Image 1: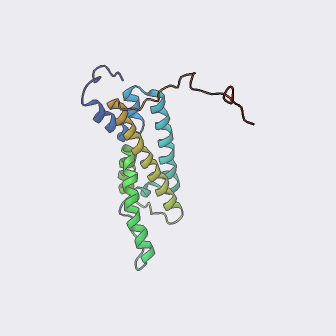
Image 2 (image 1 turned 60 degrees about the vertical axis):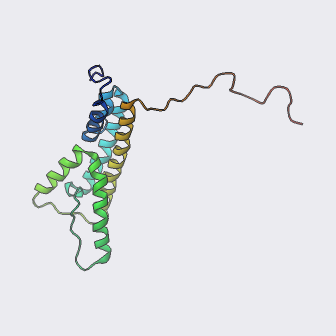
Image 3 (image 1 turned 60 degrees about the horizontal axis):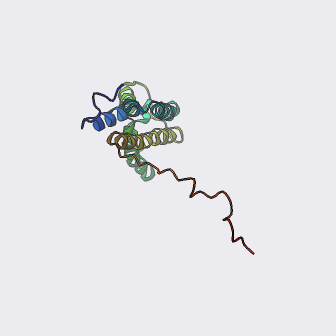
Length: 166
């Protein structure tokens, strides 16, 4: 995709953020950072779908039922809603997985450890994608911090000349 039509447009940053949310790495590809975008796409996709492979499509669900009369399980159920907020940052992947999980008849919620490991993998992928979305926004706005190259005069490769130690 070319930056020319949206080069100075105020829509460039929101479009990059939406694309980065929809499919991880797509915002960077849109901005012209193809290698970075593909790396993000591969890493987030692999992490998210590994979690789904471990825990099934029901792992992306804020309403996972908890066992009755168990305080520890009730607390885990409430904690899962926080993981869902992290998972939903995977965008299209999380929305599709949640929709498939709602329609999956006969699929059950996995208990510990599979269900919890799946929540962690998909949640961490979502949190990483949140950082990627922020990075896409920064790059779209041109706010990337440039590291000033150090001059060869200020570099020292050895001990200072003249005045060695005694």
